[in-house]
Length: 252
Ligand code: NDP
Figure 1: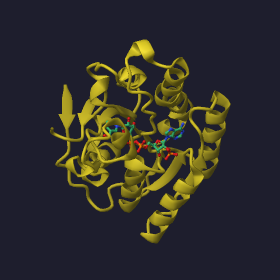
Figure 2: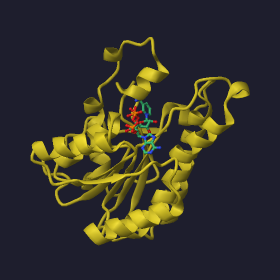
Figure 3: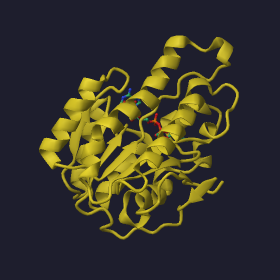
Figure 4: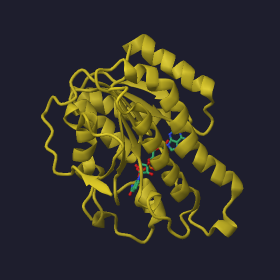
């Protein structure tokens, strides 16, 4: 069952003084989420694999008068546990805690029958979409515990709730993402103030969507800006107490 918070109206200073990490912050939904969080007062940590894209987001946030962000280039396909540990150490030194973690970076992989699916591509998709999300979460948990009310948001998809032909590793990785969210939420329930949820953005106008649906008119689907109410709701204190749930950013 999906929850819906797409009608949420965020106060302008909803995320004031919060430290929020966004993975895949250089493009698509992650870029808009980072800018939106900053516009609501958050100091955002921009993680992604393409440094110039992160620098552009950094500049746009500064130009808009948002709190100075931080940039951490990291290729999640190459990252090992030591990289995550060093990253957590750096955040600890700089900020001393983490209030929000948006797992947004993902690879689409191939759209092809499993019988033809390339094994190396399968491993990359699972590495970025699942293993890296686990590694980051595990190493960042102590910093999230230092927050008054930490929020972890995993990015899901409709093919993570019901398998669909030709969606291969991407679909399977999103089922795993739901599992990761549920296991962590259950472990933290009653013993931690950290809440953990998953969020399906729904059809959204990005490079990934255009790759998955090349014949589609991009204007027929929502812009990343239109789906931000749910992202704000889950990162802000109004969602305290919500945990272990799957949210859909769009009604359709
Ligand atoms: P995009 O492909 O447009 O953006 C993905 C971002 O993740 C990019 O910034 C990309 O970096 C980054 N990324 C990819 N691989 C890595 C890596 N190895 N290391 C670090 N960063 C990486 O995707 P969307 O914005 O469309 O998707 C965002 C999330 O929403 C994903 O989790 C996706 O599965 C989910 N989603 C999207 C839907 C849609 O319709 N758009 C629908 C359902 C779910 P770079 O810019 O360098 O390529």
